[in-house]
Image (cartoon, rainbow, N blue to C red; front, side, top):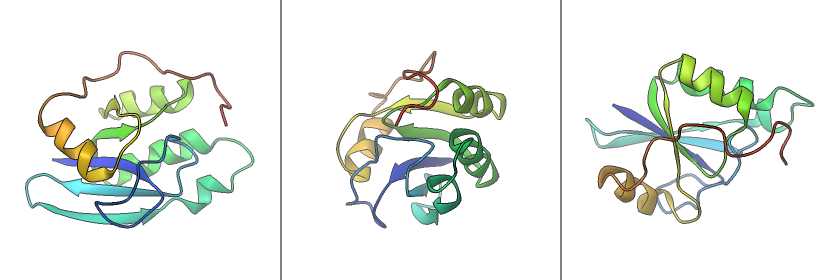
Length: 120
């Protein structure tokens, strides 16, 4: 199973980015293979509007079944849920720390978005 993390860096030591739609990158970790890839999210970072929806579509195309992020707005939340992707809020820390918390079951699946649309 693949888990996507919102990040600004390129490895497991990278800090999580608190924004979903405008996160600079996604780190997609494959729990089965213990490998990861980093995917640029520049198209959404620079978008005038619709960044959350574009980012949600990107995460779905990457095959992630879970997303770990700081915050997620209502439109992106709906697209992610419709794609069968669980959303987990992690707050601050590195990808490695959030991954350990996810594996330990310490990041429950969110039931709702936690910010208004167009949150910056």
